[in-house]
Length: 177
Image (tube, rainbow, N blue to C red):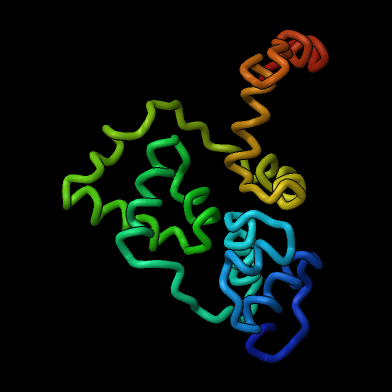
């Protein structure tokens, strides 16, 4: 995709992402873009990041002092979000988030994994992850977060508190993969 962007080809992206990109290119900050579009600043950062991933030329802007970004990365990590989700919310790439967390750890502000909530990590097969991509885009979230939300709902940990595990397993016919 980056090659298409470099050659001047028109990028296919959702209209809302294109709208945010145009406002970013006009020089507006995230807060002003959020106010004008009715989005949250987190959504503005996420759309900016998605435009960047699609290969669009997105100007780099100062979002605040580096200490603020490091503090925000630590705060989000402590909620249990993964590096990819933190990057999406902050509108930066995962390497930047890792650098912020590593620096915070060196400074004693974050204990790394010992400071984050405990969780089981499950790798999604590529075909399942690919099937979730359009649903994640529609909800302005990552595949990782969407999969986590689905599992919480099925396990009865969501807002409606219905345990769907048996219903799903019964519908599947009881066979294992």
